[in-house]
Length: 425
Image 1 (cartoon, rainbow, N blue to C red):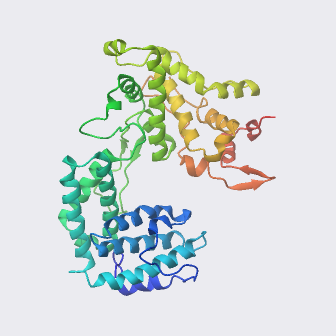
Image 2: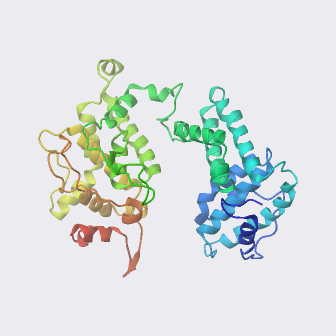
Image 3: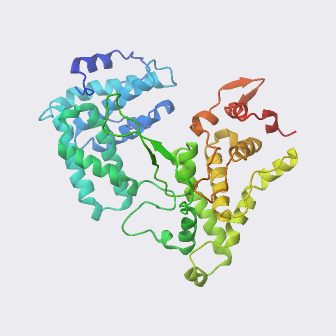
């Protein structure tokens, strides 16, 4: 039976059998739909694990069983009391399937589970990643890297750390290093290597990307390294710069926006800039200088912040879209646009209350900034709240008088402002 690292077989098995069984789902049959499609919405993080289990089922049923067992353990940790909608039924279904597959696959194991999954992981890497990088399409390679990542996560729960083979660790490091090159994308493949997509060769796309990647004069966010234990003297306590690739990445490191949101808004902003810039240009102009026109970013800023400026006028307050003398105007405008798009992308239902978005943006950029904006290294962004944007600002937490009071009201309190400014008549 599969076990977590450091736990004996009997402990893990007892853990599985303690899950209460509800007679609301019949035993699985070969004609059942894929179990990854039955996952309740509260357990979505285990979907990739079950998809990998379905993918490797024919090649190695035992490894597929280990993946499902790992998914079951993870689901139980996420919802131990099965309070979520459909969780108890799903756990019962998966438990029945695991009991059946344990008996069926135990006879197929040549060695123990630890040796079995390591052998499969190494073969999968060699056949599908090492050899496939020159023969497979990017979409296939993206899928293979995702499978390899999940397999290694499962492997770490089955194999004790001291028994992980050096070759397995080497392959895992290679997967971790290169998988970003094959991440899924909507339109623009930013990270792929080798033959570039034709859309990435368009001059207007190159000009937009180049404008976003001008971050040299921005103060880099810093990481403080800490020892893993009180007695660990292997590293010295010091601050180090976080790696930043473009303006949106920089904003994310400051405000804690989610990775998927940043990727989506990066493509969104590049396409907006490229489409606006190419309207009054031809290829000859791009051949002379691969830069956005002076008015492109300004026109986009005026369009995006039209409602925000109207909100400020209605409340008779000054807007915070300030361009200090001597500042890099284009870079600062891109920072404003990028911040607004990231707020919008992560605002959930709050985006249907435009005055809320205006208020959040207004306070996140208001003049708590010291020094000249984006001009000198001494410049400091004091509007950094040191919070996770989604968890701290966007999480609903109270219902009062029929209104949904989001965490923005906590932000209002922290900033010393009046929440009543949020409302329109």
